Every structure is written in structure tokens, then in C-alpha cells.
Image (cartoon, rainbow, N blue to C red; front, side):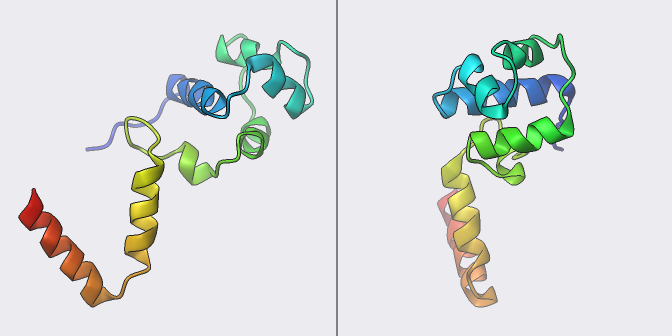
Length: 105
């Protein structure tokens, strides 16, 4: 059963993707058009995050909403690529892949 995402998870994911994009809290704030301390205040939970800010954040760190809400323990681009490739296969090819994976585990 999947763990539900809570507000703390959102804040953690913001920090994760901000660091992954090699952006400081200050630089992220400025790119979003806010004061230098804005992201730090969000990450410290002194200001509540607006959905519109989260959507703008996705653009700044070059991810999609699907990337952000991916339910794995950590964002894994390889998993996403595997799913995209798998989804582009025919039904027969998907079954072949599933059978192979079952044999390999």
C-alpha cells in the first residue's frame, strides 16, 4: 500500500528538486519572482505553499507534476524512462517484458 503524501513530504520534495537543479533557496526565490528569503520561509514552513507557486517551481527546476508526485522513496528518472518505454510497447511486447521480469526476480 502506498504512503499518502503529506505537507512535510511536499516540502521535502521541494528541497530535493531544488538541490537536484543545483539551485540555492535564494536563487530559486528570485527565479520565482519573490524576495530572497521566500523559499527558505516555505522550506521552514513559516509561509504556506500556494499551488500556483508549486506549479511555477516545477518550471524553475524543469520537472513535471508527475515527476514531483512520483511515489517512490526518491525521484528516479530511470524508473520514469522504463515506464515510458514500457507504455510505448505493444500488448504482446509488454507481456514478454513482464514474463522476463518475473523470471529475473
